[in-house]
Length: 255
Figure 1 (cartoon, helix red, strand yellow):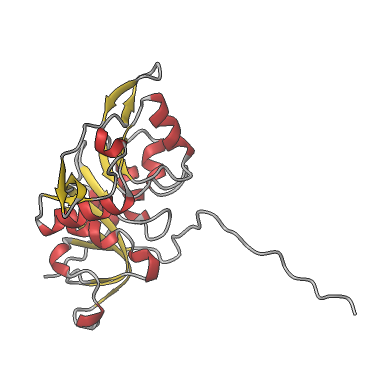
Figure 2 (cartoon, one colour):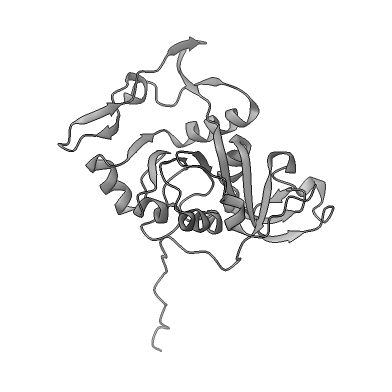
């Protein structure tokens, strides 16, 4: 089955208002920027997004956030997105912060059909006890807080029950994909992308290079095409660096 769609605009056109999206990437590494830009252009609002973070102020998911299109974020950290922090603290945005490993496993479990699992992450903290602010009121009080989690003991150690995450749509970015949707990710850009792809009921992959079926060796495939519904071309140069750190040039010692 040929899953290639001729444009990102067409790929996202049926994402409705209020949809739950699982979006791959870590910071700006491996984010599906082509699909996000198309979704921003479409004007879809009320989105409930699951992603490790929310990009930066002017790139990635930050484009949707700045336009007021995101109603809720499930993330592991705010990152360097000042608008994310502002909307959260002012009560404009609901945010469920969750430990990073737990977020990854919730997505993986959702894709594997596992409804919930026990984890030691968060035991003895507000993650267990509840009360983490999900939404603030305009006066700074907590309007909606996280509930307490079920705790069980295994082998003398306490664990929290965490529910799996599934999404209406998943948006991910690959280095290479074939027309059947089999995909390969480049190094660290693999990050949350396969997990989000698995958790989406409809998964959209933007690929820097699209090849014919059979060109990717079976053992090299990171994401099988069974999880993918649509493939679109991405601009390989459509990348940014969140923070560039360089070492000062060394000067030769005088002789």
